[in-house]
Image (spheres, rainbow over the protein chains, first blue to last red):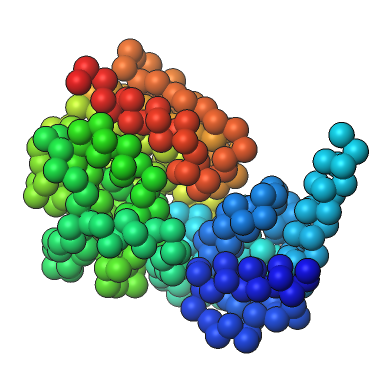
Length: 88
Length: 300
């Protein structure tokens, strides 16, 4: 599942940033390694929200430093949404 | 233009990814540099201030480029890209944000085409597919005037952020005829933008004053920061004005739209406020797209 999310995250980042696919690893720093400046990060966040049906608020987005943290946040939000759905 | 700060330094005024340590370092160094070499600091500040970021065009925007009739115009001796969609009898000109490009406003194209409008956009110098590394309000507003002169008569101007303020500034400078403007996430005062820029980078006010003076000198008196008051332009503009602003916009806070509407204080000036759209997602909000299309279509 994590690989699945990583692949989708890679596709979305590649859509906005000129970088080699293999550089987008869980350890990669969004700013320092992928050079995601603020405008690029806005595009990426909007695309992730559309792809995964989640809402990444600004405070959370600002606190994310690596691709791995981004994936963890996405999975946590998806799991929380699924759990909520199951209990209602 | 706060995006400029972010792109140049990695500093963030809103929801970006975590700051680069180097950006924090740069912010801590700027005040010392300003004390040691204030003129050099002012020149560096100006260079950063006038350099928009370039973001790769995302795939969702590419169909808009492919379906356009492309063209090229010139401003201040520099070519810039234009785009046109549809063959409507009346024309809407779209003005993108700082660091943006025409197709960022792409979600407005089809609804406006369907409502009978030709839609014209452009990538300002140093933006999108147009060449260059630096630009400013004087050049951007002159580019707007070139587009209006070449594609006019124009029924309406749709502007976002930097492009919104410049739409009114261009009208003030060149006096072209346009009955309607829809301005999304517009700033109310250009000096506020420079002050915010200085605040984020930790640049002393004295250096910011020098930075502004340097740009004024460059334009030989044509540019006067004190007179770049978008509220006054809105007050003077006698056409219909629709301001659209998100209450959760952290780049250009909502009070800017309130000030513009309060200063204009006349029928024909309206404010649409949204929530949770921020400064950029608002361009993809279907209610905003519908309201703007309806605004331009009124009396048709």
